[in-house]
Length: 277
Image (tube, rainbow, N blue to C red; front, top):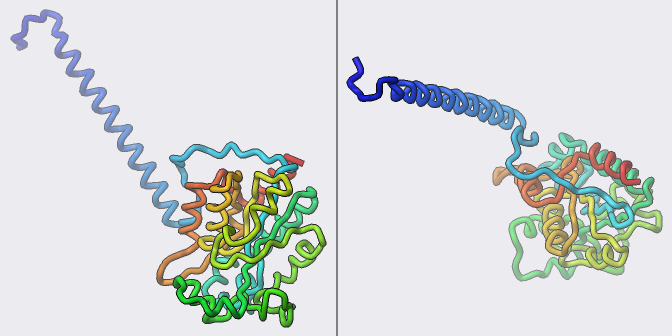
């Protein structure tokens, strides 16, 4: 029997409410735990899948084609063709994401919409092989002759070489309208004239694609963002090496989500271009 002074036994009601609240909280926590586990399982099954419950704000990027450019990094044989020198470590990623065809789809869509299109290539000349120090990937690229050309003013042996464009892209790149920038030398466009060329076209929005995801593509994204451009990365129009040191594509994808103004599929990029046309 209750020994309190409250004839209505309010403390009993309070205790029941507290217990009810506790039960609801426990149920909510349990449901959240199940949802988290399910999301984690889905992410484990496909580590490249978009997060089921994103924590970051959604993109609000909308294209104005009069000030938008498609920028493609390194659309070259050494990255994208089975005969390229990196195919052994990058080919599986290129094929999984349908990268070659997706880049071509972007070229087609941009040309159909009369957009500015720019290509930022990677070339190495004999003098570049005399560098006194190099990062790990720079050493590898130089050792395997990646993107090699005999000189900045010399196209001997260029046609069909690893430094050449992928054959299916030549109709878009060699049309006399596409901007082909000076080469970037390590990863980012801070060593070439891409930002200048885009600014001279009145561009401040970039749809970014090309190779390779965690190296040149990500470095271009970072530099363009620092230069004040609005950047949408096309996640399945890039790819990266998979080495014992790690999956380059996954590393880049995480950073794309954290930093880019938008991360689109090729289908979404084409739909946004058409909507803005």
